[in-house]
Length: 200
Image (cartoon, rainbow, N blue to C red; front, side, top):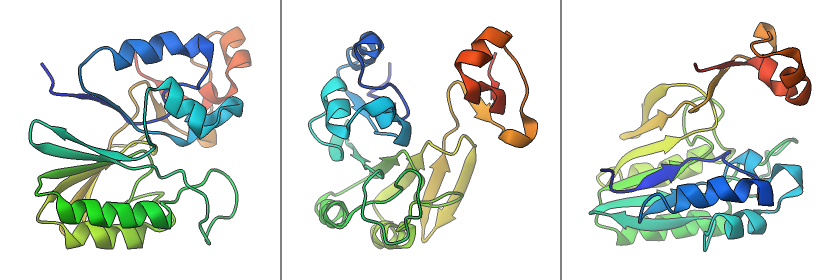
């Protein structure tokens, strides 16, 4: 009997074919939270379409779950001076200000949820800036967790534990370990499958 359900990104494109599974998740509990992943806007979907499809009012927000304050961040913002191509991995100035103000107002405990990591491997471009804010509130922030990296990892920075949560469907192996685990016709339709080890 969970108090809430959270999906941590790379969930479903904003397309009619996917709406059934999105609605099923959203209606599965009185409190369901969505985190936007970098792949959720693939295939021509916009962030606004994603928000509408997932019944979200904003790309980042806070929610009280039986006394636990969950802060959902959007780490897909543009504007990073370090960006060199590919998907953006950045939390913009307005959201950083909102995060700092929100943490100052909340009494705690707080759990931060993002798709891309704030600490550990493959962090967002302004990880140091966001880590500093979370560390200033380490008396409240009991955990920051993310998806994206397809690994299991727990690390600590500035008194805040950061947890990488692995994918629910597969482990990413990369091109070095490319192999076929499904019939050829499935691999022909989904070329990235060869770089994964799906769970049974």
